[in-house]
Length: 357
Ligand code: AHR
Image (tube, rainbow, N blue to C red; front, side):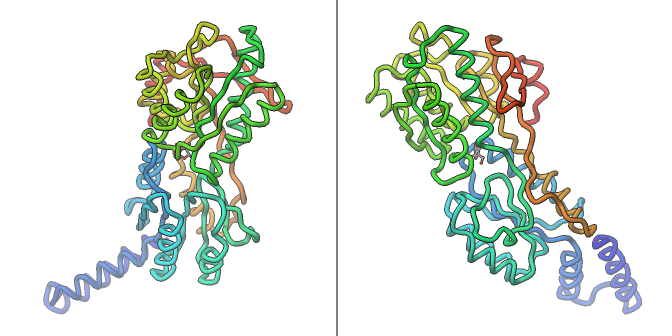
């Protein structure tokens, strides 16, 4: 509706310009027309937390592709560079700019109450995407869409349990290190809990939990030091693909081999996300044994929420995305968790070819 208003506004201004002599009399008038047009688009301020991973790049692309002028939007994109203070500043700027909607992909869960109260006081709906916020009053945001990170972690742990049971590997012989994500981020909290609970329950040797900040460089650095500290690591649980890439580099540089044959000295790498390049290809090469998907394509989902709000409906407060679990190994074909069954997708080149990210 806003877009058609914009078109009518342009037409009226053009008719006025023509009747006044055929063209705009100054650059200022032309600029005013432009300003009027941009005011008539739905203006979305998006505070992205950073660019730490391939997943994040795919997520940013998805948002930019959804909020185009062709679709009736003006997107103001701010990269928080992994700092909450930058994200808070971006939100305050969006409020000053009187955007129609604020979309926040928060770096960590806590510390948002004050700035979200400011957005609420200004009457601007806030949509949280990907990670969650932990606020004392959930009316401070309109709704959230993202992944069930703890379920991802539970699925991965259940896959490991089934695999080791079938391969007759004793729980006490499973020596795990966890390269965690950014501490305090929902993706870290959920995935760390999924593994830690399963380790306690199954009697696995969870030797270390160290943050790799969801980056390849830190993943490599952390893995190098873990390999120096422990000579019996046989499972590396990486809380995203980029950390897995770094860990694999460190393992190979230390003269060791990654793979699923842990009974014969290989180090099994488990990961989250499932980006096409290179994580999925690494699964086919048995460099990564299993990946719990984290889907980054939130642009159309957030756009659908805004469309619902524009139409006067109330979207679900929390929307969880369905996600898969991938392995090239056929040892475990399905999982059962709290009464729900999940098929393990046995990865093939065709499946990889069909992926868009
Ligand atoms: O919050 C989602 C996580 O953040 C993804 O797993 C990771 O790759 C990203 O950096």
